Amino acid sequence: MTKELSKRIITSILLFLLTIFCIFINWKIYIIIVLIISSITLSEINHMIYCITKRVDNWQWMIFNFISISYIFFTFLPSAAGLYALGPIFIFYVLSICICSDIGGFIIGKTIGGKKLTKISPNKTISGSIGSFCFSILPLLLFYNFDQSKYSYSINNFLLCLEISLVCQLGDLFISYLKRKAKVKDTGNILPGHGGLLDRIDGIIFVIPFVQIYLMGFSGYIDAWTDAISRQ
Image 1 (spheres, rainbow, N blue to C red):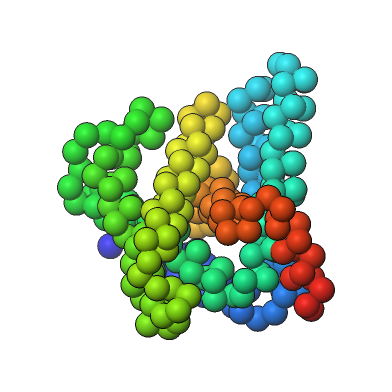
Image 2 (image 1 turned 45 degrees about the vertical axis):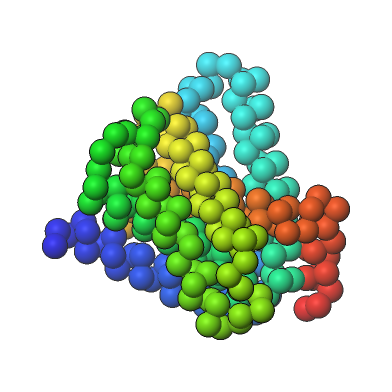
């Protein structure tokens, strides 16, 4: 095992344990961590935007920054807060789907290989994408033993897993596209063996708002956030 792979595995384990702690400890710690994650993610996005535009066009740089700020703080952050109303276990369930989707893509893609999925990210293959969809169902099979009424083997639950995997993969490709345009390998260097924080949560920042809107609709978007706050 190489030194770089060892760093990657240790960092992944620590991130996983930290995620569980932050989700289940209490609302205040959870929201503080989400705020920190949002700030770091925004910083990494803005760095890539700077690399892309080189500030040759101030208006273009300002517009892209405004879009990224609006998305992170007015879409991702409210969604992450609003999902807390559905319970920490459900948040962990959604994150588990994202993690399994990434693992499936990596394992199957490396094992089978084959035709490339897109030029945006040369390392991604069609077999890896299929592996992501297949592995995304695993959390449902596991959580079914925890709560058979909520995590039943229904068509809707299976579709939600597949849709989360799709959004996760699209989010990954979008950030890969930005990195390619910015001519950077990683979004940052905050995580040993991984790069930037955005390199690890590129799909999650799109999945969280998707799940929030999917389950509650646009009308319940802010209501869930308000309800979560009022319960604390």
